[in-house]
Amino acid sequence: MNKLFVHIWAPQFLGFGGGITAFSRALAEALHANHKQVCLFGKLDATSDWHGLPLKGARAWPFRLRTLGFSFQAIESAWQDRPSVIISTHLNFGPIANFIRGLLGIPYVLVAHGIDVHANLSRSRLSALRSANAVWAVSRWTRDRLLDVGVVAARIHILPNTVSQEVFTIAPPDSALRQRYAIAPDEKVILTVARLDAEESYKGYDNVLRALPQVRGAIGKVRFLIVGKGNDTARVQGLVADLGLSDCVTLCGFVPDGELPAHYRLADVFALPSLGEGFGIVFLEAMACGIPVLGGNRDGSVEALADGALGRLVDPTSVESISHGLIALLRREGSAFWFEPVVLRTTCLQYFGRGVFRKLVSQLITRPL
Image 1 (spheres, rainbow, N blue to C red):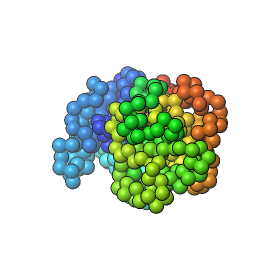
Image 2: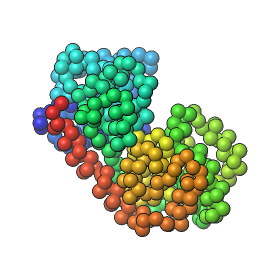
Image 3: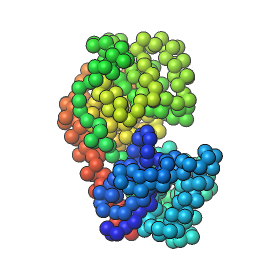
Image 4: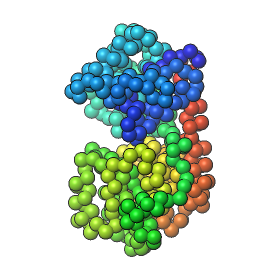
């Protein structure tokens, strides 16, 4: 199978590296490391290359025609290259892959991340999902959502997320960054990294805000940093004001990739008590930086925290549960290794490191399609 030629489709490979972009990059790197021939297609990218791999993009097309441009490019390249398999890291590209398989007989794999799988999928996307030669789900929680929409169980395989362990590392907190946010020496820091988007309010930052008064009463000075931007920002600012928390909450806005590890290192606790997280790469990023984590117990976060072995799981619908969890972590209550940065990082990588991810990708790509 070393001669396997793979087309990988993704929203983008360049630019900001969160979520699906981070997964797509890791997948491309894993296949290349396994000596597979790879060509990348990023809908939002300019045609160029990524880490020495050819990258074709539709960025030159007018915005309203970009999906059409990407489709033409994907079909034309499939016709010319005749790849062994097409892997799409976003379900939206499924109908194109399904069309190409009908035209050229090229098998395709779809990657499912979580909330992208739902009962209101368009008929063409649902058909592509059910018809895929294989579907790689990032968690058991995502697999269950796939089963709910009629994907055959035998076609679903679990491929958890991984982390850029060369980027997210242990280091002392950046004093200049603490000064930027005016964090006092005796303040404990809680961090959330999430898009502030009205459609992603399930991330749980509202309930962290509501838990802060109780946390402050038990711990003392606490600062809550929220890294991310989106159309929900104004509402969050209003909630902060309504709760009387303006003195202890900082909305950091968008943070470029290069500064993200330093933001994790500011934290005493990383918190994302989500209700709809397919997995949560951010948990891995925090742990790779040696930061204890808190997640919700009702979605794919459970698997990112290894069923509670790697961090504290709480009821994301309960402000009381969240506040108790945060207080416990800030008091260093829990498994001892959560508070030993090197051990936490090492244990996280034993579950989700690059080597583990590469091995899983190698196993999956060699399965008959």
